[in-house]
Length: 333
Ligand SMILES: *Cc1c(COP(=O)(O)O)cnc(C)c1O
Image (cartoon, rainbow, N blue to C red):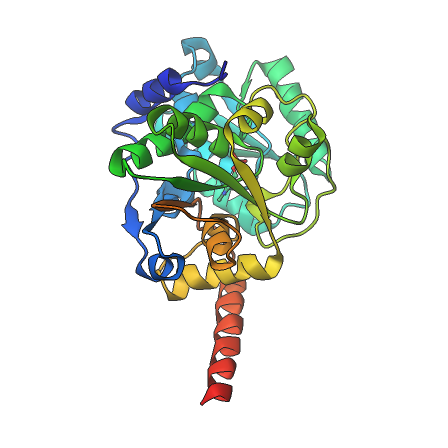
């Protein structure tokens, strides 16, 4: 039994329709030529707030009871989920509190405030921020919306799978960035239901891939969090994981891990060849294809999950790899 099935995903689509439009599915000429099969990019990087997380957040906000809606929402995410939840709550006139530690950089704090959320600074670690979330749930009756291990969030992310399946009936493979697994679980549930022959492969960074380690161990395990270009893929899956571990175990055909250099190459390719700004996490599907890490057999979709990358860092990556490419060309001339 799949915990979040196609019915819930179809319901989520009806719920978020009108608030969230479908994103483009575009052909990549360069990747198609390189891979020898048609390759498409599903551009969730064009989603409002810069990532697909708005789908799950919007579905979760719209699924609240009237009482929960009146009291408001809380989360500890400072990344794409925090942004998405802030935006989704504001759009529905619901209070959102985002708890952060004092170590979160000022620009991130401001970005969340600008989206209309209330910021609460507590302690000096992500754990301190999470403790405050739990206190607000207990003492003030706010509803916590976690970034991935939540049925409404998974169903919202799954709407991407429906869009892919309906746009390209011949899809043979979908590459999905994988962290906590809300995106991969939802997309795989939709794809496997609508296109049973298609494969779905998760892609993570080699540094600190918690779902990969957990799938290998046969249960949720903790991994050390280290810095990576795919920063949106960092963090654990939760030792008390309820949904995403089992769904990823039962639905994913494989998980592929990439080096930092391979991820950088994906970011560069997205920008110079496809004209798209992708953050590290968003570029891993493209990167896996460029690195020949996937056996492609037919029409392939790489899901580009987000674009929220520090501008200076993006420029450095694009310029560095362009210089290297220029130097290599110079030598052959
Ligand atoms: C959150 C996120 C992911 C991973 O999603 P999970 O549901 O945690 O697996 C991938 N890419 C981007 C840009 C994200 O923000």
